[in-house]
Every structure is written in structure tokens, then in C-alpha cells.
Length: 93
Image (cartoon, rainbow, N blue to C red; front, side):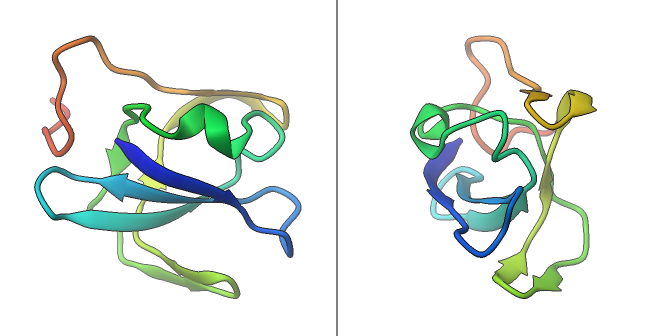
């Protein structure tokens, strides 16, 4: 679940997302979805995250995963969603 989302002023395409993985587990992800979403649209939303990637050091901070999306890019990016009942931290099968 997205618990915080903010603009990265120095980046044309990135938003900084803080994701809850259930319990006290949190991860920071930088996602290239700025053209498609405003930060306030994302808070509270369940997203599918790839969590088994090595953290990537970026100019803006450490990205600890990746959110999944479809579409050609730019303003046509669509975050993958989950059915009601899914909980933060559950595995994708």
C-alpha cells in the first residue's frame, strides 16, 4: 500500500513512493510515473511491487524495489491493481 507519495523536483519522470509491505515493513521506491499520476492520487492505493530486486542507489535516494505497470509510457502508464481483500505484503502467485 502506498503510504506516502511525493514529487521529486529534480527529476522529470519520478515520484518517490513509500510503500507498506505489512506490519512495520516499509520500502522506498522511485517510480517513473509522474506524467500519469499526481502524488495525492496514489496514497492509500494498493500496488504490486517487485521486492526481490537489489536496492539501487540513485541521485535522489535509494530505490528498494519497483512498482508494476502497463502501457506505452509517458502519461499512458497504468499501475497494476489488486482485487478487494488483498493485503500489503502478500505474495503474488
